[in-house]
Image (cartoon, rainbow, N blue to C red; front, top):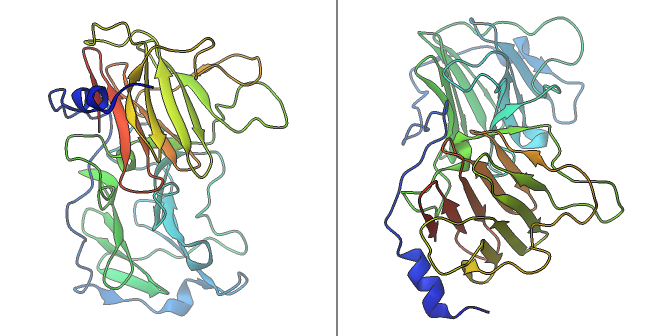
Length: 306
């Protein structure tokens, strides 16, 4: 176990701000939808689901829905202003289910009957704790809660969800700006296989070993340390720092099999942990169990913990 002084020293590496290629940061404030004219809810309501759901199209062809029973709203289709892989955006109060996604299983397409009606420019729909509107552009805006606790914006100027992840340092990338997917990063087959293992372009191998707490770690050549440490980790709840990897390293898969590379601009969410592949080949990992977010960032020239 490394000393608290070493953990503190690692946290004092110079600040950095990294963004993945093809992402757009969310607006810093929730959109104001009060100016839009309310559309008749019955035109868009599907009562076949428990509690009802709302489905609509946007003028530029996105298929959208409000699904309060699932705690989410969102849109499927060719999203403007995002990485080409993303074809879905999810608005949710849950940090691990909201944001951009690349998926073959769209969750906001009307499941029965004819196609959803178009929500015209200048109009909005209010249902449960969600509200969605279409502005000139076109620009699609949705909010959750009253007062608003989360929101999403879809436009050629950028497509993203907000607010920024609570408690995250200002100079650390936000998971909201990275693309999740249907891809599995579990290695091999076995009854206890629940921890994703992956590589990033810069050569690190990482594992998210979280389940109501746990550890995330990446091992390989760590730049800028000069002390021989080859593994960076966050334990939640617990310390954050660097260390010499064990034998085998923490990131060793539980079962044999090929380890996949996480593409730049993409993220993995698993049981209270998130890791993001940076566009310089590095990685940022965050644990949000038992307190404020903790984690680390590894770039091509330094390691930073927080």
